[in-house]
Length: 444
Image (cartoon, rainbow, N blue to C red; front, top):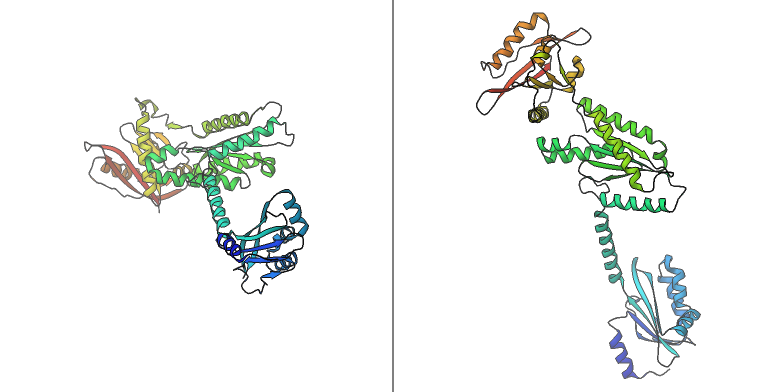
């Protein structure tokens, strides 16, 4: 095979920037001339001209091709395969991986038929950088798409992902998929707005994260979506669908315990299951779960205000809603900074109090919200300590002492007494008049 040297130089110069190696081969016989020797195989002594390109390429394939691409490489270098491709088209290419000094390198093999129809150019193009850039771009796009479906605060799937889930389920409903069984649990975090307003959004954010962890611990195998500021949805399938009633009860039980102890989030929850006979869309199931959640919320949030029958007639003007909210805000702030003891706070204008849940539980109060709590509380104090108790409270209310700390005995529901040390205080209004009377009762 005679190759004009000038033509050889022109071809080599033109293609050297693209190809790592380039062979000029006789398609039928396999005779070859190397236009561009490979930089990747510097250690190999490959003759610049030879009689069997196909055997040479197969031998190098066994040495350098990545094991997972071995079968592909055999097809790329197979004489019959090359001839079949070139009979249909003047050009074809395929990509495989090589292992060069322990590193994976992506290579594009290109075969181009020459004008005489008898010869072809066989080139290897190092596209490793190109492939890895595309892979990085693909991962970046996946990350962007994934982030678009994730809630930033909790890391759970967000409303976008929830809408996609609903659409997928709708397709299965429309296709009358007989294997489709699912349930929906709708959750709403109680009092999040109040916490944001009274204790700040950082506290509210952490409260949401705690609520999310609580939900995920109860439903560890189900898809959990945060679809709003205080709203979560769980789509139940498989194992957790089968035990859905038990799981819902677990969530409600934990929420109730948190509410009693003030130790964690309280969550209203309602559930509904798919009924093929009546549900035409996912939204039908979702709406029932949402309604069930609000019914549960009504049961969780009644504000039971207790009045001692002996003093009920003294309530002339019920406390207005804005005063209730202010009392709650001050009480929550007080509860946050107090490390121990029972806490209570009384609105002096309406003689309306809020008591810590722990105090309500330990002494048998009917509610944490009470009118004329001072008169009720006196019934719990040991008769011998009643006079000193009244004197200490009066001293603080009249401004004779900023903080009064006088120990006295208080009766528990079982009839026994414990000694507590109260720390009473007064909060004045803008005019300097007493507005709130509070206390921290520390058991001794």
